[in-house]
Length: 256
Image (cartoon, rainbow, N blue to C red; front, side, top):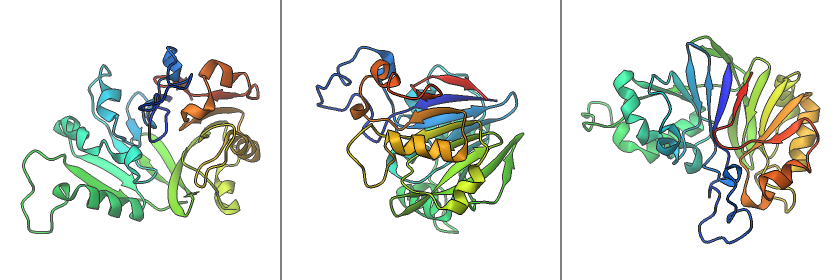
C-alpha cells in the first residue's frame, strides 16, 4: 500500500495570495502547497482522503482509472470543494463518498443540484455521487483496504480521522478524547496536521502538539501535513524536528 500526498497546505495554500514572505517567495518545489488531500492505493484499490478545490490540478498527469471511494474528514471547503470535479471519474461508475452524518448534510447543502428532492429529475451532467454515512469506531472495507474511522475534534466540530492497519491519517485536529486516542495506539506511520511552530490556533495543532500526540500513540514515523507558510521554508523547518518526523510535501509518495 502506498500514500501520495496530493496536497499538504492549509485552506489558503502556499504561496498565499499577496504574501511576500520568504516561504511564499521560495523557488523550492517543497514550499509550494496545494490544499490538503491524499491518495491511498493498493494494486487493486484506489481511495482519496478528502477532495479539495485543487483536486483537478492534483489529478492532472496521474493515471486515469477508477476511484473506489472518497473518505471525507469534514466538509470545510478546503477539504471537499473539488467534489464537482469528480465528474470525469463517474464515467467509470458512481462516486462513493464516505463521511459522518454532519459532513454529509453539509455537502448536500453545498451541492444541491447533485441531490435533488425525491421524485425530481437529476440535472444532466452532474457528478453521480453516492453518500455513505460512517460512524467513528465502526470498521468498514473498500476493496482490499480495511478502514477504521476515528473521532477527532476540529475546535467544536466532530470530524473523522482514519486508521488503515498500522497507518493513520489525522488532519485538522485540535483535541481528541482519550477513548478515541486509544484506537490509534500502536500505529507505525502517522500523518497528522500541524500548522506551524508558534502562535496557537483555536482549531489546529501546532508542531509541539503533533509531537506530543505522535508520542502518545507510539508512532515511529510521522509526517506533518496541513502546513501553512508560517512553518518556514521546508528545508529549514525539517532541521528543527525530531529524527523520525518529516514535513510532508506535495507529490511525495510513501510506502506503507
